[in-house]
Image 1 (cartoon, rainbow, N blue to C red):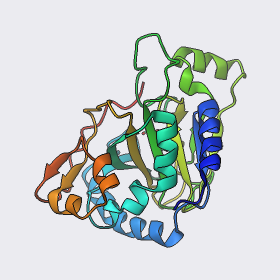
Image 2 (image 1 turned 90 degrees about the vertical axis):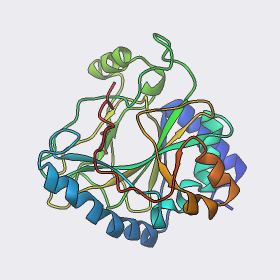
Image 3 (image 1 turned 135 degrees about the vertical axis):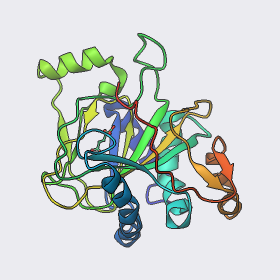
Image 4 (image 1 turned 120 degrees about the vertical axis):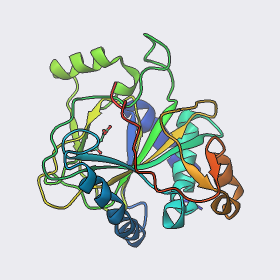
Amino acid sequence: MGRYDESERDALAASFERDGFLMLREHFPRATIEAWRDAFMPLLQPHVDANANGNRGPGRYYVTLPFDGLFADPAIFCDEDIVGIVERVAGRDPVMCQLATDTPVLGSQNQDWHRDTPALFDNAPETPSFQLAVNFPLVDVDDSNGPLETTRGTHRMSREEALDAMEAGRIAPERVPMQLGDVMIRDVRGLHRGTPNLIAAPRPMVVIGYSRAWYFRPEVHIDVPRGVLAGLPARARRLLRFNNIVEETTRSFDENYRQFAY
Ligand SMILES: O=C(O)CCC(=O)C(=O)O
């Protein structure tokens, strides 16, 4: 049972088709997300210690989450509303390909406007959605700590067309403040950027990637421990089918997903 019925999911999917993103406000329980934050902060620190300048540009860290414990919670990655909407916009039987975080800290800057993947076919930006990101912050996000900025409708335009439309004022960038528990689902082709975090506390944002059933992204992956997989419901196991099965969880440290902006 999700929070939205079938017709509400249809309406949300229709708004996604138009805008390239949607928000599910107050979707996850705050306590669940606070527990994720507490578990995440010790994972961030070694990256900050190793590279004070960020591994994703100044003051920005990309950190993969280990797929175990509370991070392997099917109530999050297999949430019925989210997967129901993902299936409506990216087709039946999707694949989960990524579980990670983006964290700007004090000293981060505006990113260049970018999309996270190139068009599926050269010069054919109008294809249906094939790669989605589900984002939720581990802290409340407002103007002080680096909200995402995005653009409506650019998921079906070329990068050049979208940038021209912004420059001409036909598309206005929008800041996306978010509270703990809020969820954003976005087509990763939508033109967006991270903005500076101006306060001392890091601003982690989880990203869960879902792909069309046949789409494989070699630049990201999840190491799924065999024992964790065995304890998951069938639908959750199916979502994970393209990922590596490992005997034990790995704490990946060398983040090699560096080519992320198109
Ligand atoms: O989390 C953010 O603020 C945006 C990060 C982003 O767009 C990226 O690194 O590709």
